[in-house]
Amino acid sequence: MSIFVILGIALGLAMDALAVAVATSVTLRQASARQKFRLAFHFGLFQFLMPIAGWLAGLTFARSVQAVDHWIAFGLLTFVGVKAIVTGLSADSEGRQRDPTRGLALVALSVATSIDAFAVGLSFAMLGVQIWYASLIIGVVTGVVTALGMEVGARLGARFGRRMEIVGGLVLIAIGIKILVDHLG
Image 1 (spheres, helix red, strand yellow):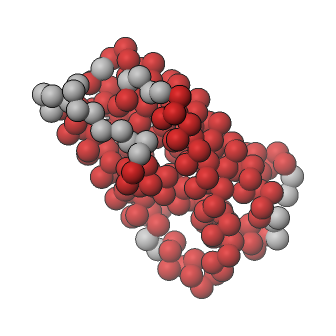
Image 2: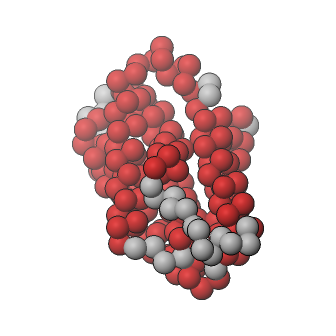
């Protein structure tokens, strides 16, 4: 498989991470370099690991996961999105903002944005693609795209405040719905 095909796949897989990074950064308004790094690193790491996991899982296990992967992504993104909306609507959200680049929220977002990479790993196994090379490219591309998305989202959040936090939550839910519709349709 050529580098250009792998880069195309990597960019396609990174689009969910980009949208989630923008939405997450919007909720932070003033994302620090550490928060940007944390999200970019974890999204890149999960996008690196999931194709490897899919490649190793084999066809038997894959059929079981493919039947529910879209529901898992939808549930995780909806959960985090609803939390962002509730925080944006609460009167004191300016003072007690939760950091979605930490803890369970970070893990949920990382898993939700990388589930499709698992299926890509299965395809790579069937095509005989060198998984380590392809996964490394996917992880690096996702990390870079996520960092860029964090920068854009932070600027939007700083400019528009709580309203953008609500919009960010709605975007996360919309991404979850899109994943669900794409797999069910």
